Image (tube, rainbow over all chains, first blue to last red; front, side):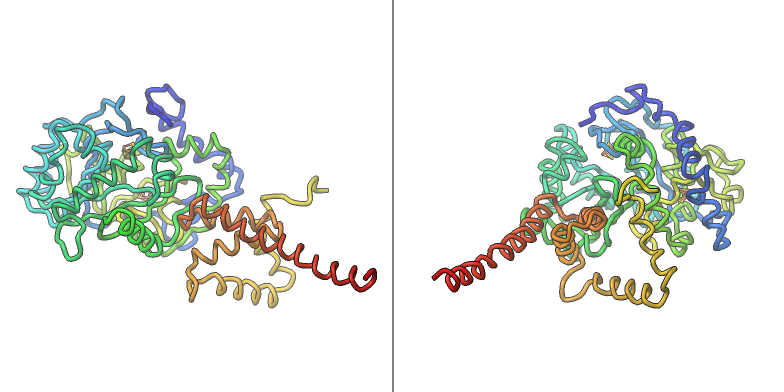
Length: 351
Length: 111
Ligand code: SF4
Ligand code: SF4
């Protein structure tokens, strides 16, 4: 199990240009597989264009208490990129003016940002409809200072979305680290105890499932049924929805694909499962991603690949709706991860 | 000439069999697709049956395909191994039950 980020290890793949190079060469350079651009051109869907903003996704820092094997953020305890209060204030100013109905905080472990609670308190005063925190669950049990997080979430009516790769200990710990399963179960029980995830409860608790290896997620509703049955039977845990998310071939997952000689097969699977109907709803069409240092990206994945938005408005401090709406989305072959099968986004399937 | 009889990359080309007989090929794939749809059995259960049969048929393509399919459906490796043992038990049972025929024959020929 990894204990360090690729960045800390000094790996070549920690560099975004190296990743982009891999994604553009090999099977995509010799025409074995069509580039994403050519593929979406077949159905006249190129260029992808941004529609009005609905979801603002904020990455408040890459620091995390875990070092999951396939993390697309390459997050970990050794990552020092953390959003400042000043950037948070700039974001608050922008939220007030946009029509975005959803605010989505992610990381790393967003709770590890020292200004996390301040930010949540200020943002919840603005009154967005859906205020999401992507919590990795174990953080709630990681240290005493986080024990009251379920109460804090409840107080601000936060929509909690958490990763759970499997309903068995073995598969979960293999992907996310020794002991993660038991801690996650405990955290879920605590969330249930304050009312999260209970049938009919307004305190929304959703789980994210992403495959533990070089394969695509199964049918979202069938997986949800299996998760619900197993978590209920084994631990009396309840939750609302399961989002099945495809692993995109970037960062640590790309590193794994290459090291395990699964890269080509995986790209083939993605291209074979390409679904033009999913293209219309890929999340970058209604989402903006803000990095820890305030820069704007089409999605969290482009943020990690350091592909900035194709607009004069590049930083949250210079946010201008008219410059961002209708912009052409920046794409590469990793985008196939969003259009395979029923499609994939931070809110699960899209088609 | 290909160096081996089986090439993992050939599995991707399975669909090409329709090129030399479209009608029968399409009928087969329609049927195949239908069989694996959610029905009285779940798609997950069907995947495990397919995995076990893939082993008794010893088809390397099917083993690759249904191992991956099982993983996609959240099947654990313990469940997969158990399924294969079911297939193996039927295989060996089917061999051994013929022992009765051998015994009958011996008894008839040699009292
Ligand atoms: S918990 Fe999330 S952010 Fe942290 S290492 Fe795991 S996948 Fe990455
Ligand atoms: S990876 Fe990002 S830019 Fe590409 S399709 Fe997905 S959301 Fe859009």
